[in-house]
Image (cartoon, rainbow, N blue to C red; front, side, top):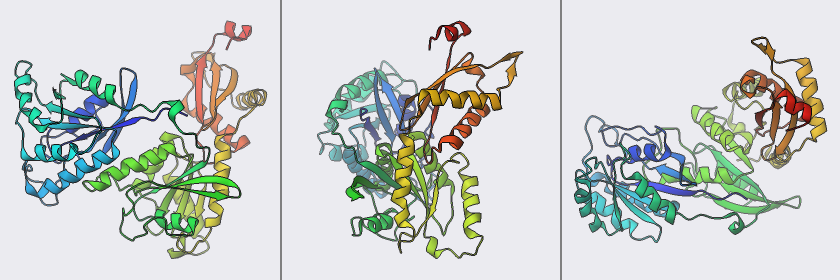
Length: 460
């Protein structure tokens, strides 16, 4: 079992540079950066690496601007945001493995900084203070000194914009970040199924329908479920772990505080899952956020089944299910291999078909193709549709082998890996799926180079 990545949360009052620091740590410009407080409208996360340690950084964002206040910068110590600041800090304590309290070293300490520190002091998790915006090397130590009053330990004077001091900060973070090694992870061979989707799509209702009891809160209020809830059940003698997760809101509509961190928990559940069930609200139809969630599922390489819920409430005729299927296939054209099931969690319609379909997907994720059989497939596929020539030369396929499962991973040895066009890779994948039906599962293709001489000598 792989190591578990730690989560490092960036917390603090608005406009102290959390998003700038986030971009600096992950090495990419992912967060929106602005001089106006509250610019970050949703939670962003990404993996970062420092001296060989990989961890997930979460940009909690500034406290969002309330509707109608977007024409002016927010007051740093506004009482209207104090409750939200407290909520942000409290949830960081619950869900993060380490917390960086970002403050504005240039403008000095504020009441909001002290309020966050008061809450953070309640945890025994690693805490760090990053006094940001200290670009002047000669002044930064003096300007950062006052933040020792927060009582959170060492203060790191940094400039997230220019990268100054961030190395020292990361050295300390990584040294104290919990690292759960492989041999310390409790083995759990149960099939893990995560329920994901937008708020109010019916995840908790389906969860309860499967269990036959009220294990989760069911409410018409979007986002009721805030924690990932694991429950073990047995189905035909097999142990299954059901993971009910919080709803994931449309980008830009994640509320301050609690719902920000519920998204982290949902993503954590996805990383643990063997198969993920994406619930779509049949009354509303597929949305851009459904596509976004499906994209995350593909990135994590979990098995995937799409459940169109509330089908009992949809006005139908003889063409409805066909038209609905075509629309979903069009909107999820990057996942043509995903099975669809139209259900009603409320009255149980087709719910009994979910587990058989999940097991079919899980079997596909663990399918192995013998090397000889795989190479016969490859010869036939290349013979039926040879790759295009380039500068009078042709791409040659020498050998193929499967090197992993969950997801199935294949290595193809070729003379020129850079000549493998994405369209030809797609052709090979389509042919492979047609013959072996990797339903609901992502497959990985890796192309490696070999010379004709190495091929003749049998070197792989």
